[in-house]
Image (cartoon, rainbow, N blue to C red; front, side, top):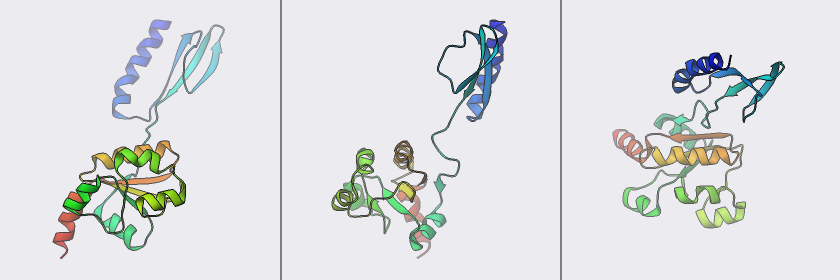
Length: 173
């Protein structure tokens, strides 16, 4: 019986690699373990329900056009997670707040006055729309995941980053 459960479980693993929201179950003797929930099925066995969760909401990527709209309408707090020297050397997105990636976790836990004093902008509330940006989209996605772990609900990242911004801005001039 346990072998059959293992085979059922093994059949699901490849699907998990393709779809990280698959729910699957297995019956195991004793039913011990860390799982999302368990249901007794028969004496000595428990049906274990496993679920995988993504820490990234489905629509987290923002395009250049969407970011422009958010900035014009002041509908988001845009946080650039590059180092200050990168902003001086390459430039920055007008209206963005610079919070280097290494400081995002601490910065988002500061009080509003301390945040404003240190970073020159308003501390976003956990319910505010926050968009992270960087040079090419790698660090901003890391910052997004950090914000999610801190309880921020409406977070996104600009996957093209500064490189994409410059390309579009030069094209539109």
